[in-house]
Image 1 (cartoon, rainbow, N blue to C red):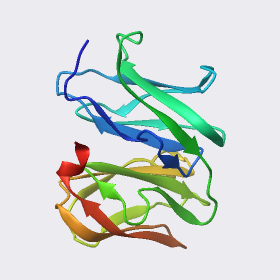
Image 2 (image 1 turned 60 degrees about the vertical axis):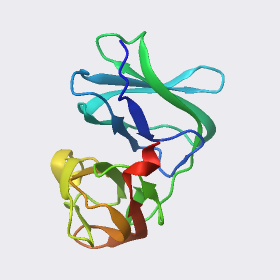
Image 3 (image 1 turned 90 degrees about the horizontal axis):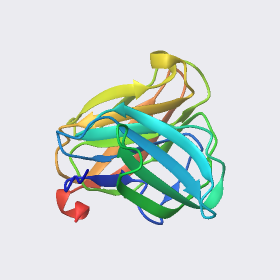
Image 4 (image 1 turned 90 degrees about the vertical axis):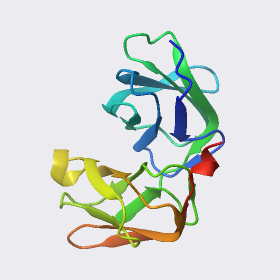
Length: 191
């Protein structure tokens, strides 16, 4: 089934993923149903699968345990038609980072192409995390995390983010925090 609005926003072709547990996210039409994603290595061997944890139009899926590696491909389909891919991204690599609260995506100075985006990372304890943008815009919603479902990897989806540059994302738990600076949110980056 074709979806002209379908896009994988992360991970993009040849992008670096800083976590073995990560969120893939993107856009699809309102009529697209729940999704399934399959990650393969360069030999075509299946590495991981995930279903959408947030359904289209601003979809998110959570992958866990993807080993460090230099070449992966993600293929996304509607769950009801897994053999009819909507899109794919390839050539991206995984390298896990460690520490208290780690923001794995987005990186400092990232160019984000929609006013809805997903951030993810890890934490070393099971206390609740909070996320915010310095612009004060955006409505963060934790879709996976220590307080939410006892995962040490967390996923937060922001909606209604104000376009512009120089924004800082901060993620905190009870004992530590992490920030990424100079985020640039501009829809023309999607093209």
